[in-house]
Image (cartoon, rainbow, N blue to C red; front, side):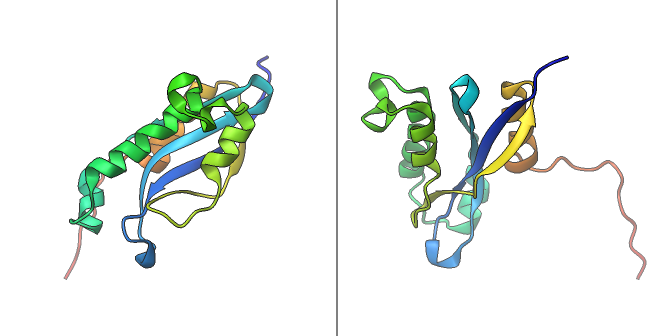
Length: 140
């Protein structure tokens, strides 16, 4: 039997106009303290983001989002925040802020495979919903 691991996660969001509180889910960050695991994956749907704000500076958003996986990985390229211990990096990433890049509240889960959790979260929370093959009929 596989040992269950406790993990924390948050959804990474892009909020193009903070005052409107509209957002597009753009990635996930997952942390497992017992395994010193911290990973983030970004999959920004730029068309959805542009639908919310056609004037957004997409290059700047890409740069900001690209920093998150670097901070998770740590090392020299990740800057001073990337030198912190895993859990401190996680809490820095998920700290509440009122900027274009935000995260959801932190949620907790149990799993046996952390990389599969990331894929599951991307499928359910970030990637566009898959079309259901059943089509509804409408009577007028």
